[in-house]
Each structure stands twice: as C-alpha cells, then as structure tokens.
Image 1 (cartoon, helix red, strand yellow):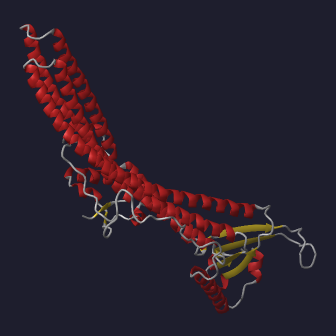
Image 2: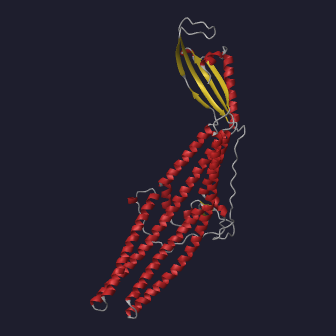
Image 3: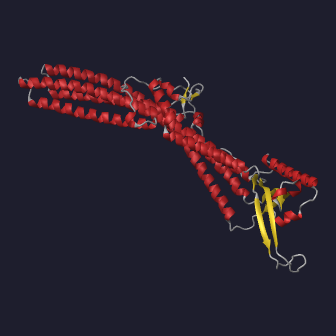
Length: 492
C-alpha cells in the first residue's frame, strides 16, 4: 500500500492517459492471477504415493472361487425383513450421530473452499476521509525554511485495495490439496458412521427377536411348570407324592419366572437403545414381538477377495488423512522459499467530495514485494521435521487400519461358519432333549425313575432351547459383522 504523498506525486493530469494506465495495471494484475491459478510455478514437497501394503489373494475362512460379486449399498435388503428396512430408514433420517457426521462433512467442505479462495486475489473497498491540519511553524522539507501559516487539508479516498500472493512454490496449492483431502476424509468418516448406525440397527433388531424367542420359550415352559405344580399338589393331598417333589417343582417354576423377567428386562433395554439409534424417544418407541427361530443369514457368495476392502470407509478415511498430511509437508517446505506478493490500489482521491468520481481524481498503484526467510531460529526446520513425523504416524495408522480390516473380515467369516455349525448341533440337541423329557415323564408315571430325572430333563431342554435361540442370534450377528467388515453387502 502506497502512502498518500506517493500517490499524489504519481498522478497524471491527462484523464485519458490516467484511464489507460488504470486499465493497464489491472489487466497486468489479472494476467498474473490467471497464470498463478493455472499452476504456473513448481510445487515443492513430495507428491502422494500410496504406501505398499501386503494384500492377500483370499481369506482362510472363505476360499475364493469365481469372480467377486458386485457390492450393494442397501445391504440390509439381503435379509428380506420389511421391518428392518423401515427401522434403518428411520435411523438414516433421524439418527443424531449421523446428523453430526453430516455437519462435519459440510464444515470440512467449507474449509476446503476457504483454502481455494487463497488462489484468487483479495480485493476490498476501503473508502475513507482524512482532515488534517498542518502546523504553521513546521519546516519545509524542500527549502528548509519555516512555513508561515497553518494549513488544513481534506482528503477523500475511495480505493479498491488488492492483495495477492503469487503461488510460485505451490504453498497455496498444497494447502488446498490438504484441505480437499481432509474434506474427503470427513466424507469417508460419514460413511463409517452411516455403516455403523445401519449395522447397529440390524444387530439390535435381531437381538430383540432373539430375546422374543427366549421369552416365548420361557412362557411356554412356565405354563408347563404351573400345570406340573398343580398336578403334584393334588397328588400330595392324595398321598401319592412326597412334599419334597412339590417343593422341587415350585422352586423350578419360580426360578424360571425370575429368568423370564430378566429376559423381559433385557428386551426393554435393547428396545430403548434401538430407539436412540432411530432418533426416537424411548417412551414412544415400540417394536412388536417377533420371535427369531428359523431365520438364517444370507449365503456368502464365493469370490470375496481382499480387494473388496478398498470399499471400507475407515480405510479410505485413513488414506485421505495420509494424503492431507503429505500435502502439509509441501506447505512446510515452501516456507523455506521466498514469498512473492502483489499489493495494489485503484480508485479515486480528491480534496472535495463533489468531484471525487471525476476521472482526474483517479489514482492507481501496484507494489510487487518479495520476502526472503533469512533467520528464524530454526523454526522452519523444526516445523518441517514435525510435519514429516506426523506423516510417518499417519502412514502407520493407515497400514494398521488395513491390517485391522483384513482381521475383521477373517474374524467375521470364522464366526459365521462356527455359529452355523453350532446352530445345527443345537437343533439336534433340542430334538434329543425333547425325547429325553418325553421318556423321563413316561418312566416317572410308571414309577421307574425319581422325579429328579424329570426335572433334569426339563432343565436340559430349556437350556438347549435358550442356547439355540442365542446361537441363531450370534449367527445373524456374525453375518452383519461380515457385511460391515467388507464395507457393505453384495448383490445376489
């Protein structure tokens, strides 16, 4: 920015010449701005290269055969549950954690636009008025003689101030690259939150259904136990059984009632948690009971290579953080080089407001400036070393996230196959327990066994039925975890 005295000495009396100079200077500035915006000049610092990470061709628990299936965004439709579809739609529309993630994406994208704005000149309108009285006893700088009288000067100035950094070394472009990568990382974080919310809704939904199945089993068992207590109480009055048998039956009934109440409490807690995920108040949120008995997860198609992990949003987020940190090394490196800046002024200046917009009042100035960093006490070196250290941390975080992704898929595949086998074994155990109870009741009626055998058979059947309901839920949960680990489902 030039001083008022410099501006006065550079005025040109001819208005047309003034106009040509005014236009010429600003065309020059505009040309420089365009050249810099097109990327004229180098970009210091390393260009991003993805770190090398070992990629297995297949998973141990799922041999790859055939081509990999296409991925599906609405993966929950693989389960064919209309109620689950409605719950996930409600969570997508009203979940507050998801809304926070969306707002973070908006913030990051706005900051990226802020970084992009530095590629353009900064122009501001700064009108001002100065009224200054000069002393009559001042000394003239030209003649050295004392001025004889005081002078009051009015100065009206309506300038457009311009400031622009010529991005010779790519500092601004590297900053934009970093901000853009951070915005993309924020969008990938939104994908992480969205996938987590969707999978949590599915998990809570099947938890509720599994608890409904256990409540149904316990209710049916309680009805049977009540009838046994009634019959044994009548037999006790007739002297056919001893009091110890009745006490055993009553103890078993009360223990089962307590177990039923505990499952009902757990079911209510799960429903309340699901209400939060769906963005609904718990008191007004209800999911109708729907026992989970014969449900089975969608079959995992062959051909799930490790390359599907590139769809995992957490891996993508870790890589974008790496891109952003890599670009910051360029910003830190550019600080070692000279900074080229243009400052300019164009507008009108007059001693009177009546003719300030006359072309003879036009003023313009442009000042190129270069700044060389000479000595800053090692600050630039330390800043570069710190940035490179952050980059190494981010590389380690990215590689670790990829390894976690591989382990998640392998764990989910292992669990899914194991729980599928467990469900089959427990179904056979329930069938055998039913036969055991039937034979125990028959032998007790004929006096061949003690009533303790009947109690043991009933407990065995109840335990296996509850274990089967839990195993079916674990099987569904492992299927959901596999889809989450893959970053989404697959097209059938």
